[in-house]
Image 1 (tube, rainbow, N blue to C red):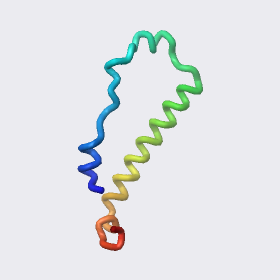
Image 2: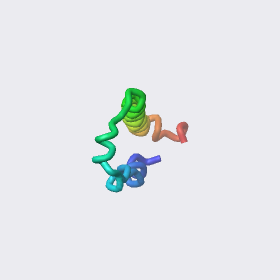
Image 3: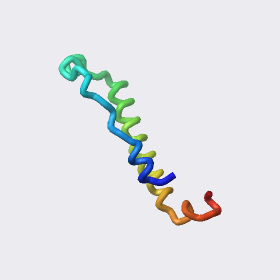
Length: 65
């Protein structure tokens, strides 16, 4: 998989339809804060790891294909 193809098909999550004032007034409990932080870290690490693998010379060799 080419990194360019991945990036071309990736997009930000649409949040314009969320009521941020309501969300702010309700807030987050400790479990929700933990889950959001955890998955944010996992998403970043997945992207960084995939980019690292794709950019390795072995990924372009016939053995890897």
